[in-house]
Length: 315
Image (cartoon, rainbow, N blue to C red):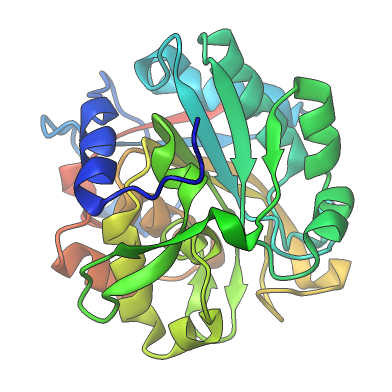
């Protein structure tokens, strides 16, 4: 694949639309949060949310990841034979996994292996790190995952950034990490954590790691910026890692005491719903989070439970 040729927005959207599509799940389950009280019913709109929880001592994180996708109809619902897949984790910080600043490597490995089993031609790991990329790859475990699975770990060099028209409410043209928009399928794989400016960093905010440029400017009017990026980057699915979540001193943390175990994964084909489900892990009401509220306002998805079909699985 030619990473040096920039894509137009039309080309990137055509790629995304070609491989997007919603999955309707049969059955329903409950979430241990305010959404139970809202009374979910199965939706015919094709939007779903799966909550997978590790409830047994010593449960296998990789197996929990597999169960989440099984509950959504299986990985083949999303990944086809011959696809080039980009997995977009949050590995921006040179932190060990237990600090919950970065995506759990066991979840990352399981997702890559699932894509390979579905017949993906190539799986790539891509994130524009904040700390030195090689240190991030080493400490987060992403480098070892790439070695074990044979996935390509893309170094975020400047030659892979291309200005593209975002046409957002705040952001117009911005440098984009080309491997992400050139992929056939994209799986958004953030970790759930506290953020000092936006309150939380979940799925939609993970796209800040998919662009270049002066990213400190993206923190001005941050909620609208997050939504602008989310309307441009449309993943096949979002899987939010809530195995351990950072509850304070985010987004970088640095101490294990900043994190707690939630042993939970949130999988959805609706980016707003995914973030809404993950917000509940922090005891936060989705409609009180600026970027979640704006995401629904601008038509990116919903945080209303009656518009989703959901399942809950335990391991």
